[in-house]
Length: 403
Image (cartoon, rainbow, N blue to C red; front, top):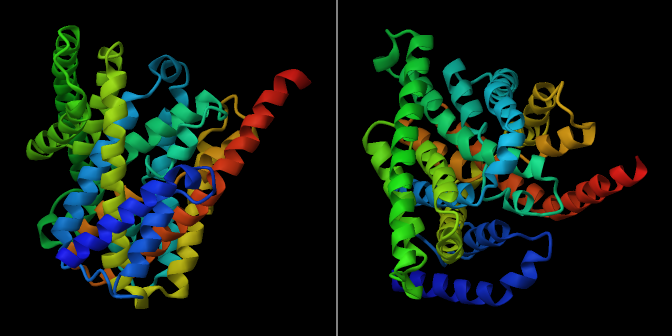
C-alpha cells in the first residue's frame, strides 16, 4: 500500500508541475492519467498492482462523475440554454435512442456469439457521452455557445437516462425479468429514476443555495473550506437519489443547474475551489482504470472489438446526431462537430463495472469492446478537441463577415 501511495503521490507532483503546459497541447489530462496507469500497472512495469475490487472501482468512478456533472452544470449559462434547448432535447430524445438502436444492429452483425440482450447491453454502455472528456470543447469560448451548452446538457443527462435502460436489459438477461413486459419495465424504471432524481437534486440545490447566500452575506466561509460545499452537495445529491431509487446522475446534473442559477451571485468562489477536487478524483479514476481494467484485460481486444470501437465513435454516434438535427438552423459542419464530440469515458466505465458484476456469458467481449472504445475515445477526442474547436470558432467568426 505504501509503495502505491508513494508512486501515485510522485505522479501527482510531477503532473502538477507541467499541467499548464500540457493543457496547451493536444494531450489532455485523461490521456496522461490513463497512460500512466497502463505503464505503471501489471501490463508493463508492474509498479501498481492494485488490489481493488469492482465495487471500489465503481464507487470511485461514480463519485468522480457525480462531482463533474454537478460542477459543470453549475457553470452552465441558463440564458443561452433556454435559447438553444431544442438542440439537447433532440440529442436526448431522438439521437440517444437511435444511437442505441444503431449500436445494437451493428453489434448483432459483428458479435454473433453474443445474445441479443447482451448486444443491447453493450450498445447502452457506449451510448452516453462524457462531460469530463468533452470539457475542452464545452468550456472553449471560441466554440459557439449554442453548441457548447447543447453538448454540456446532453452529456449531463444522457448517462442518467441510460441507467434505467441498462438495468432493464440486465433484468431481462436474468430470470427475474423473464416474465415482465419489456416496454412497461423500461418506461417504469425511466420515469422513476428521472422523477426521483429531479426532485432530490432540485430540492437539495434550493436549500444549499439559500444557505450559501446566507453564509456569504455573513462572511462565514473561510478559504480552506471553500471547495467543500460543492463536493458535499454533489455527493449528497448522488447518494440520496440512489438510496431513494432514483438516478444519482440526474440528481447531480439537475441540482447543479438549479444551484448555479439560485446561487449565482455567490457561487464563483466555491466552484473555482471545487474544480481542483474534481480533477484529483478524475486523476485517480483514470489511473485505476488504466492499471486495473486495461492492464488486466489485454488479451480480449480482438479485431471486432477495435472495429466496433471505431464505429461507435464515428458512424454509430454521428449518423443519429446528423439525422436528429435535421430541420435545425445548423450547418453540416456544426452537425458533424456535435456528432464527433461524443466522447466515452466515466459513464461507460461505471456501466461496465455494473455489467461485470452480473457475470454475463459474453462478459469478456463486452469488457474488451468497452475498453477499446474508451481508450480510443480518450486519444482521439483529446488530440482533436483544441484544433477542431479552433477551426469551428474561426469559421463561425468569418460567416457574418462573409454575409
